[in-house]
Length: 346
Image (cartoon, rainbow, N blue to C red; front, side, top):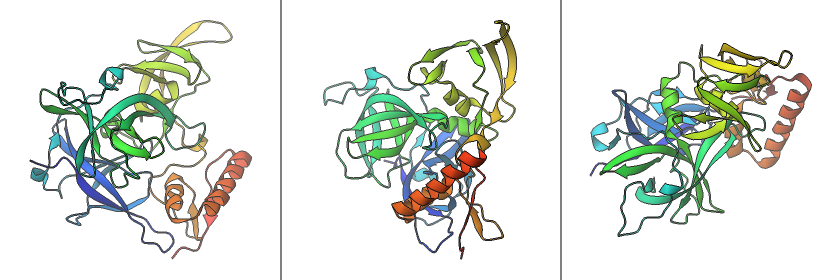
């Protein structure tokens, strides 16, 4: 039987002498007639990604700046060795899919993933929304939260594993594993729809949104309502759940993406309907979101999300606190995230 997954290694860009590498899991998806390799990047600045068995580098197609999606070509992979997911379910699971499997029960709609090369069952708990970059006031991204049936000290190296259900003997992809919390044995799953959007978008290098100061009542045919926890929310017809308005535009926004929006004019109290383009939010976020490290000829390095993610892995907490303090002060004083640090770069 063909394997569902294969092991990958990310080699990050270097800016100080270090040999840090990170192991990941990858798998194959056929979508619109093409076969893609899928995994996650954990916001690391990537110099090379390669198959850990063959040591052959893989060509990156999408290194997303608005999600953890990392999508690569399969030219250098012997795809005959692996199962290829050919069906997806964009809909977020619900509590009807949450039961653990029993030996005598119907296996349709039980949720599976691959941990340490073994098929394992997980239990749906809820959908959570958390900032896509880990910083307050950034747009939220949706995560499917699941409970693992087995307990692990760590599942390092399994990020990027497929999460799927089976119907009539066919595997249906619903998401990609990204984070694990050993304290409560839960895992965070990125819905597969976010990977599909990364394949379809023109621009994955920028974060898109809209002026949320507008009193938006409706987008297209879907009403906008208020939520105590997330503010304005809207029903997403493919995810089949309500999502924050900022999440909607993070996912659906794109270069020249146009939305029909109805909003109330505070002065005239009239409802106005306009076709509105999404706008780039890059400069309004606490840190910038380039997909690689940026070096200046004067010996400085730009503080962006990829740098911070790498520093978290190769430096101690005190250094991280100092840099974060500098970021916060800079943003408070300048309202701009174009911030550079002086470093000796070898």
